[in-house]
Image: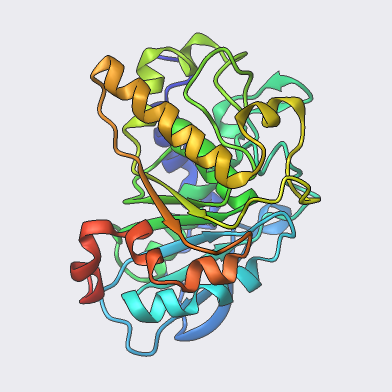
Length: 303
């Protein structure tokens, strides 16, 4: 068994999910309209901003991951139209900067002060507890879910897709500032370099390429001087701006899969004329393709 395999992370995280979420077996359902819940206890608690449409019935959950401003409530609000259109519950967890600096959020917490951490210490290991809490509240242990993140949240999810995709039906990364390329000659978190073999061998690259990942890109997200853009030398190798980096990563991954005959489950969806603007990215017609693709008609009628 691989010491760092994604399946072992999932088993460990699920084993402690009910304990971490407070054993919340009898909590009230997610309220209709906008609300918030606390998952976990004490200093480990995570605030999750929620929304349930008034006519919600038997739909999925969309977990929304905020950007670098850590404005989870705003991101929840930016997705209200998605919830209404596709019959979804929204759940937007807040990862505050005190507990989750960039290394723990955008990079997932794999490393701390340059030292690779145990999988149970990765930020990704918190997600099963949050998912489990929402499922318990809705009295549905198999409630399906999707992930969407923008900017810093997209970086968080892109690296999750590589190492811990969990059971998400689709992982949408919108306008990430840097991308995780499936290559070992670039150091993590721009590639898989510097990771142990268990996290960077061909099996792991294949797992990443088979993840249900959508690169969702705004064609006007092209400012190379954006103050929030990662302009490190490693990031500049990916491209001059977010759109170029996203296209380059998708093309590299697609070519790698074709060359090796590996399964490729990524999608790329672009929305014309949209810059680095989460609210607009989530409001345009293309959001349905990014999340659901061929599923759209079924989702619109409820899952």
